[in-house]
Length: 327
Ligand code: SF4
Image (cartoon, rainbow, N blue to C red; front, top):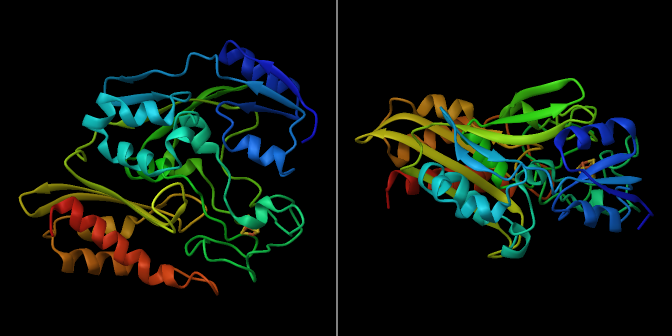
């Protein structure tokens, strides 16, 4: 590991200023991904600004939303009574991620910022446009079983590894950030990027911006929901395919639906088209299948991940059936 300086910030303003002063500095909180990346030589920040002391751990009810501090631990959020009652989809997604030990260290902000688990990204002997722009994409013609089927580019076909983000996308959260130019709020769908020609850039955060909180608006999706994750083994594995499915039902009629997927794109992937098709329809397996298959029309697989074209729709239909209480 390279040598680096370490400083602790006590206030958000001090943390933002520390990054503004030093272009080679980065924030660190739980460090569950960053330390791995540094040990492997994938990232080499010259200075780490530890933000763990900042007062950003609160989870609470606001006027029309639930606010979750950026430094709230993944385990604390999943176990929070308000989250379990009002945002059970988020609690399910958090509990599907990583291991209990990691959830006790990892923060909400860090979860949003975690990097892809594409093996070529972590292997500094291999080409990777995300790690080193212009070197090529090892996965494109290589081992691409875990990779994207939506929104990829010829520069990068990686997926976003977060389970939490899939639920937050479905719940249309916003991300509150503060930076050298002041505070702003980013729609969740705009927070993570598709790779395009710049796969090295994962998010639309500006340099020096600090995540303060995630705001989840009040919503009717706390009764009929399911987070379903398919992975290589029962725990501590990233999603091959996952889905956050939520329905607002009036009897057997779907008033509205929310669907977001993980393991299929460079960002949490909303199935907007399927959501639209489901509104006003009866909650039946046939309706679910029709809507989901339409949403998969634009999917494109590679040599080793064509199974996702079949698995993906099946997983979404199954999650919708569970959400609707259909056996
Ligand atoms: Fe790198 Fe993206 Fe290609 Fe993986 S898919 S090797 S992260 S450029």
